[in-house]
Length: 161
Image 1 (cartoon, rainbow, N blue to C red):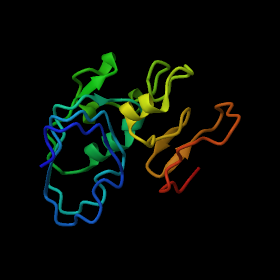
Image 2: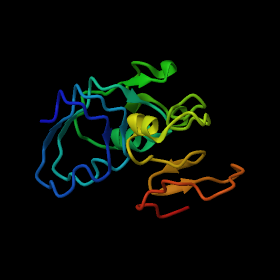
Image 3: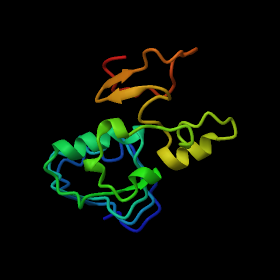
């Protein structure tokens, strides 16, 4: 059990080689972002408790939302904390198109005053999807974004870019 801690981010490599893990309790933490593949390598997982966390339901949440929709793991129905338009909506009920990063989203703010520490506070040390891109599974789509440089934070598991 990892409940009642100060965890803020669940990365793809947070739970590796735990092939027998059946119950994972992450409730009552400060988790705002969960990487899309964070629980993919837990073949025995039957119960995941992530309720009572301030989940940011933005573009970084798409992979986790998709996982929630396709898995039979009992989750306790985690709910969005932000943005305000999605507050208290179960993450697995949010349409993928509604999981966007807005200009005022700390992860994607264009304001230069946003520090890397602030980004990490919301979305952890690595972004799930590069700024201005759309990610789905192992695909990263950044077409027609008028990019001037190759996006940063492309996940190593990316198979299509």
